[in-house]
Length: 205
Image 1 (cartoon, one colour):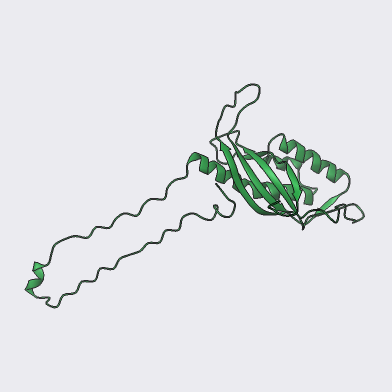
Image 2: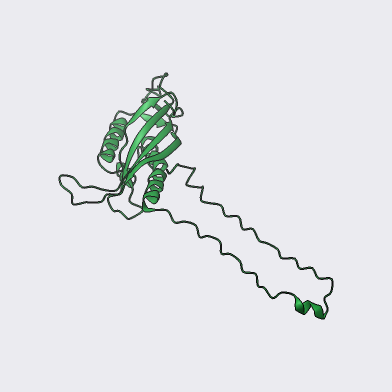
């Protein structure tokens, strides 16, 4: 299972232990030629195991989550940014839904302050089935990622500067993101296609 900030920076650390061979001889004279001629060969270190396609897909999908959250915040924080930026991290229907919501937010004169903070994200399932020509809808490699996001520092204010966020809003959002790759096996093509969420008082709840 891929876990953000746990697997991303947790590649195996290999400790190279070098054995130092110390020879002791009380008589360095001719008798030294009688010493055994055995040679010492080093056992090669095992090569790091390459991740399987499923493991790689999970890691890439999990790594996309903070990028997705950052882009959403950017678009809410800066109304001068083009909404097309959402397509760098998402595809329909999620990209369409977000672009519509952000456009409406901007048109009402609202402004976001603060950013969300990713607490945890982990892959819960992976399916690398790939059939873009499938009918009635294409089938793409998919990873489902569960994430918990701290939104306590995020506020939204109207044109007068008054907050439009209820004061008793729960601190966290628990999301279930569906991440797909329409151009698999291109590793740069993972995108969020759905991201339903619910408010929660804790990441466990």
